[in-house]
Length: 275
Length: 276
Image (cartoon, rainbow over all chains, first blue to last red; front, side, top):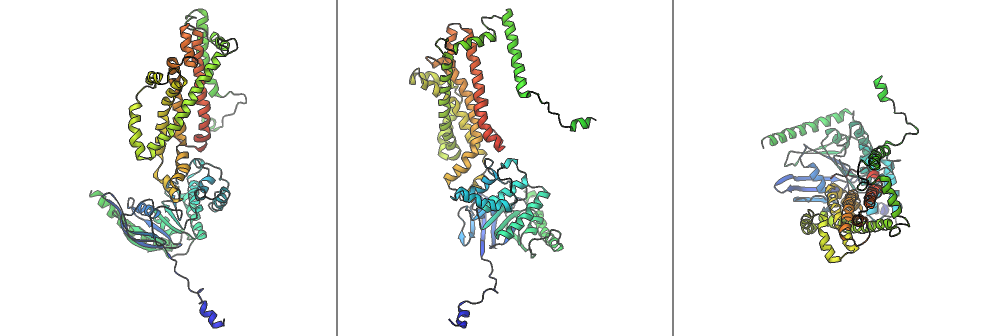
């Protein structure tokens, strides 16, 4: 094979960074409970390894959308896809972490974390090996044999995160993951989660009501409006990771998101009062 | 000064008896002591209320080789425990299954809930005449009484345990790809275990009481209930009190010892609160 042919057969690709593939696509997705519309016309594309945050006034249906993507709830309109396949049920490719941790109190930290691989049919030794990696990365070393009831909130949330990651999902869905933690603990877990995200190269979708959390961690912040809610803004946070909370540019983003959000909260309060 | 005293750790006395043991000994000792004195001095009828030491002595004899029949009280205890164990075991298996059916399935709720609501207000002993006609004077009669008495608490607590489980618990399992059987095995069964144990504890208590009563009505021979009933025929007050004492001690041992040990290995170890 001549040199020219070789070049033609293997075109230089190293210089071109391919755009990450779409991981989650939503086209006009909506969820209705009886006559109440929780979310409607939810349209967005979340790409591979993107960290997207959904923020909005309380009761705006942001968790509802997350649960629909997880497969816990069914959409009543539009299309919701993961890897181009419509979502029909929950699956191990989407890990979930709840605000309330939802650990299994009868299992130790280690056994909580190995449950995913155990369910997948992995032998116990292999499940434990996989769990150890995430126990180490989430800073749970030494607590393997503790029962959840003896742990602090921050530790419980680490267990929940490690448990979700041990299932090796492509997508991590976080439902107000810092909501039950005190400020100090929250800052630690947030910092760790950023590092984990960088190390694990997962797609993360996080629901929160905190502008600070959303702007600090996410590549993009989707702002949901008052009920029935839809996306009112899609703010790209164009700063490298990991971010410094004291970065003045971050402050600007915070102000921008806060301004849009405040307008939505005002509107939602007016709607509520007029009822 | 007062602050300092409050903050200072309490110095452990090396030979201090645990207060949890001292208090019941003192209070029961006082009761039996007064009884003993009153009976011995003739303040109360020593026939109707024989002194506790005499009751213990009589119990010692009837449980020994010189009893009538030899080792009779031990036989009574063994038979009562056998009936309790068989009935409670049956209730544990069937009660759990019925509880799971009610808690997890629509058909289970539809079939069992009305039946249980109808049967629950009936005192267990009311079944004894029917059971006597069906089974005759037989262990099956008393075992069935125990079974009925223990079942309701077990069923009720299993159902409560399932209701207490949040949908998010199921969601976590589902996001791990758990099948229905795996959800049952890894989530529902261990999740209801603390409730099942609470149900068992209450159920055993009811069953023990029902068994003694049923033995008075339905046992042709032996069992602690029968022992008391039979002793009444002969106006053997010491045996009556001996039987009552045995029932109390055994009941306490079963509730605290057996079920308590189960609780220690589950509820307490996990730090779970059982809400009822």
